[in-house]
Length: 208
Image (tube, rainbow, N blue to C red; front, side, top):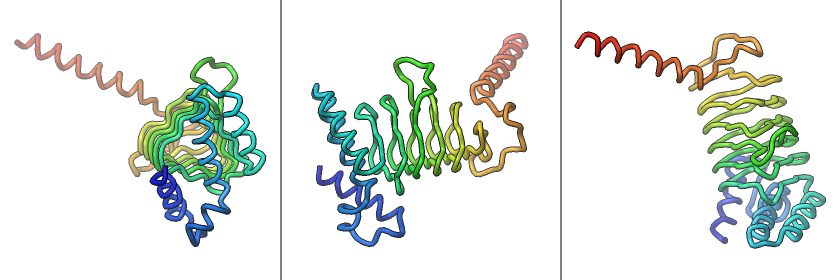
């Protein structure tokens, strides 16, 4: 537990130039308090105390302006910068070393059951006011621009911008100009590659 405490403080000090000391982070940073409260609430929920878990999370919301459902799964070294207005839904999953700015919603669309909220990979940054909605997958090392509304999966190493969000950069390279509909679909691209391989294999078999 103490190791996690040190990790959380170090993550904030590393990513926030305004953080001047460990004491300041531990006593004054709402994001630090919210993550610590979530860990307590999640532990209570896993041990069969849902009412107490919700009590902890709602008390934290009143004190910090950050709402994290006790059922959410959060990895290590999460940094919520400023944090006011952040909402993280029940079935959200967040990987390690992620950064979330104020006004972000990791929520549902209202039409899904069971897994209703997004899954974020490692080292994801979600800009201020962005909305990531539904049981979608956000890959590792993804950057989501401020104000974006993400309704589709985003592959690894991409930058997503706009409403609805589109992929603007991939692996550090700018994606050619696109409209809001004709966005590269990683599943379709993978199927095309498989189809091409099958054609080559069939040709080789015929030649033999």
